[in-house]
Amino acid sequence: MNELNITKIDNPKIKNKDNFMNIILIFGACLIFSAFLISEGIKTISSSKNIITVTGSAKESITSDYGYISINITSKSPTSDLAYSKIIENNKKIIDFFKKLNLKDESFSISMININEIEKYNQNGNPIGEILYYQGSETLTIESSDVQLI
Image (cartoon, rainbow, N blue to C red):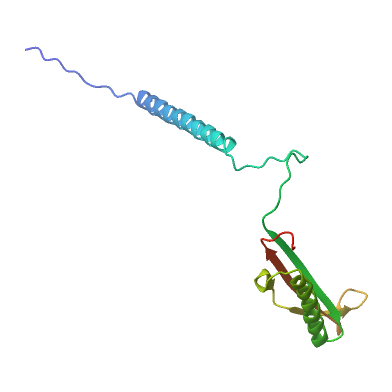
């Protein structure tokens, strides 16, 4: 009886070459797919109607529909109480001015008043333990849809 023996010979170099080719094919497919996604994104952005392009000159008049002013009120005084009261006084003057223009109370928002001690320094730039003055600050914000008032 004649028997035929067939043995399979595994060549590791051929397997590695097949794996390498699969990796290259997958990488290439991912690259093509990524390029497609990026180009679609660019098309979407460029075709959007909500983009304003600034060319350096006005081609059409634009009227704002909302106004916003931020006013920083500061004071400098020898005592913290005086710095605080100057802030309150100036704040009231500014609000009264804008209320005469018919702005409503809800148009104003006021930050907390901050009072800082400003120290005296020697010639070397080191504090000497004396207070030079007190500096107060507060931010008053005015917002309104009636832009002409602001």
